[in-house]
Length: 280
Image 1 (cartoon, one colour):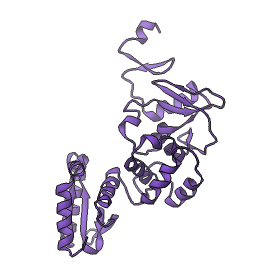
Image 2: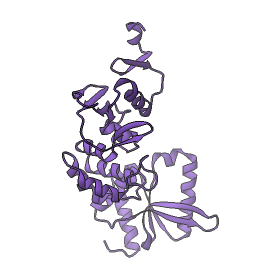
Image 3: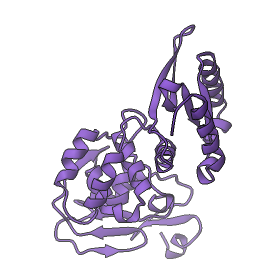
Image 4: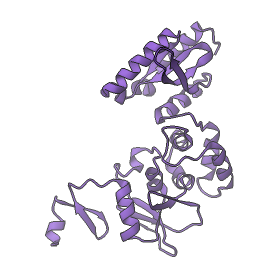
């Protein structure tokens, strides 16, 4: 192909020396597999690339869609390099896994590598997703396993993981559930239970409350944009709210606006707790 064609808007450079049609949809998984097979055989995907591939939620700036380069280690004896498309780190004796035929750093090693780029909240969000018993990362690491593995970690990033570990919960099923729970704890509210099961007796339908105080029958529901835009999700939420009200639950709702400016949300929650005779 002529250099003029490669420079046109019809093409885009995906790796040094490699181009693809601009209208071709290339997921991170596709790029990673191609990179490991053709561009840098023997390399181990690492850092944010490994974390994103395994389904760990990250701040946008660390994702492929946010412009992050492909990160890898090695192969052995490779010199570290940093470019806009590929960043090569020196090889380290870290544990590895294979996921979808791609060899990558163990998820906890990947988080250790990028811990300095994450706030404590974002790190706990990532670790919650990794430990989650549902709706989490593609490869689960139970909290008990985390404790064992993190105890063996050394070097940069390890202290941050150890500091975050006590806050990790296996029943947190979304980043905002984690963020809302942590925000509540910072305000010294009692720690809520997560994804509490409620059964509608007449139909046998199961619902799960995002965050709850079961003894006081207070349900805290986070409403994302998907809840508003997705008709099926919206309808299910309406049904769940009806079931909760029938069962005597008080429902306190939160949105992304409440998370960023939480005063009104916490006032509603405080009122609900006081009415249910919980002393804060």
